[in-house]
Length: 388
Ligand SMILES: [Zn+2]
Image (cartoon, rainbow, N blue to C red):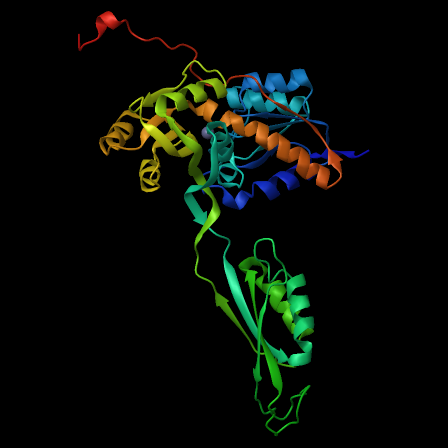
């Protein structure tokens, strides 16, 4: 039987999956309120930390509310219950409910918010529409007496070097001849002060995450038999990584645009704003770009990625109109809340899995309160069509 998690254990697990460093500089993510030592048996996941969702959390007996959107995005000087946000905070604190947010760091995560939307659409293998640079890497090169090479590789690997995909302890070695002449005061492992030595050495090359540089060099120096080990640190060029905003990929087989739209309205949660689209109904769609949330700054990326259709939310008149003038991609606006809601189920499943890996359990529930702000959608009578 596993133990219930504490708020701080949940925060650790969530911040490993949605690292705060991936958030945009203007964003506000992490724990908004909550006692780190408090036990958490129930986590409610929702898009918006609004009053209706806070009430839902209380009704269900949640100990932690995990939302996509932050309660406070801008600095405040007080949290009195005289404003809607202050009231939400008071409701949560008074009832011992913690609030945690993963916003643009969840957009950037792999899998992230747009992956859940891509799953709804049926996109298979995919890449970020706007990739973040991959984790910066160093290449560390050192020269060690031949018989010490394998031990040194072990030590550097244990400190974090030599990991490439699903492989560890990756290294390249070549043998050659080193040379040096120890000066007075030196305590050479090989050779003597004042005499030239020419030992057989192995050149060892390993990659390492830049953030592990100090640890890897520490392991190198601690394990290397020489008083003054020679080593080089090369910073690798940066390249696009697996994380970033939006996703683009292909459907298993091409479908007509109107069939894809039918699929969307069937799979997405019901909202009053519904789905708006621009594009020929018989357009053959294979390559699809998606971006959960407001995506009208990614038209060019969707076009550059050769997407037949771009599915996102919050599309404004001018950017949408200008994008369509290019001839592709066709556009679909599914509403902000509906575009992000599918991620909640994915996030809940991953939270349970990640906690199980550290021996803790939690019960999760995805909020069914639709917090899309629009509650009426009227279409003017065809009699008022200015074209008729
Ligand atoms: Zn959003």
